Length: 145
Image (cartoon, rainbow, N blue to C red; front, side, top):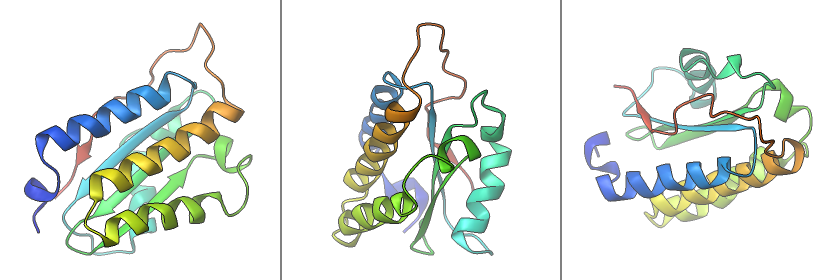
């Protein structure tokens, strides 16, 4: 399955909307990155993409990246130091399991939205929105090869 048909434009917009809604409650930043394949493990690639998207430059180190390699059927979630130091130790694993439940049934949009909502909930708990907060990173889905 190529990345072009992985999500319809309408589904992509629903995901961007979910990111926007989650970020209204927090100073944290959530990104989704989709590419077809990677020559390295999903988590290792996610860390590289995290830096390429400048997610490590957020003021409070509270960025979260959901990374997918479509053809590899692999995905990873990584958070910056600010959020990683605060969430429960199994948080990313339980979030991945919830997403995987949807993915196994071919419901990729629903899985991504659930992951975004779970990450947003944790970010809201630890990094609530403040009136001086700005959206530091794009909410658009980024794509690789």
